[in-house]
Image (cartoon, rainbow, N blue to C red; front, top):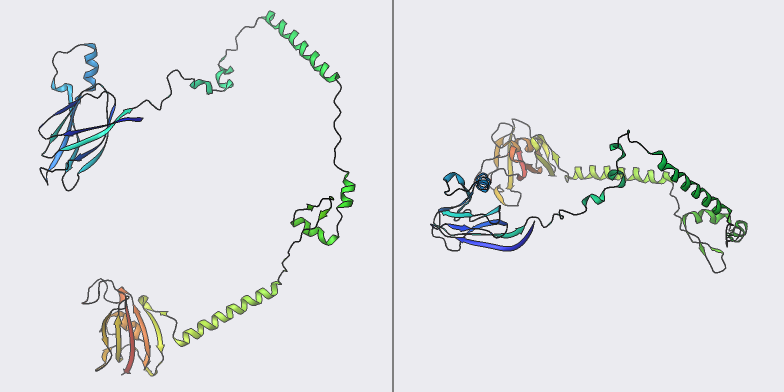
Length: 368
């Protein structure tokens, strides 16, 4: 299908537009006009055409008057200002047929499309499409009946032709053959003598191509061979690396640089160790703290004055604190990362958005 020319029409409310395409016509789009008479109303495009079944009957018998059943009316599209102001269409109207467009609404509608040639890409009717068939497909011997009679008189001429072919083949064998030119290559032994090289270079020649000079002698190619490293040394290096990594990890945990994950996904990192009593469930602990969001914004703090005091493990604070403060000693400093499920969850608390991960820097001042 090939587009031949552009086609368009403007439909006005209250007026029917009847067209008879001079060629096959493809309608591709419908759109509201630039000026809207109704800025919120809907405009529907209706199409009326002759019933194809009635068109066949008219060819056989001429009908003087058309009945309502002879025509079919359908909706092409509906457009609403501010919502759907254009609609893609894919409708082909046949040439020399009558079509009527009508608008239901107050807004003008533009239709556009292309005159098309639907048969441009198809081969001509009398093309040699069957010429691509192979000889075996064109002459399928399976379709020939086995009862075909053969006239024996017609075979005598074929026997004479066979004898002529035999005579020609005999003559061809009797003709003297042209002498084949002798190979210009030198004997293998001489080549081996001139290409002889010390045994140490034989292994190198397997990895590199030979190069010959003007005198025909092979030029040795330098091949760099990497010295194989002993396997024992590599294994010892790997073991030493593993030991160093373990020592480094243990040192970081002692210094308080590594995070530990506790129940509920709470993570803690000890910044400074303490001494004396250890905070356990049921103990009354006094704390200093700074509470921050992941973006660094501080939402709460207690850095001077009366310290914040609560009973550990009794639910007086968020779950993340009951889990994260446990195990601290007096004077210890710790960073606690509390996931939403162990904090305020989906609730919004003043400066804390819903589903927030909270970061606390805490210091234990006392344990009773």
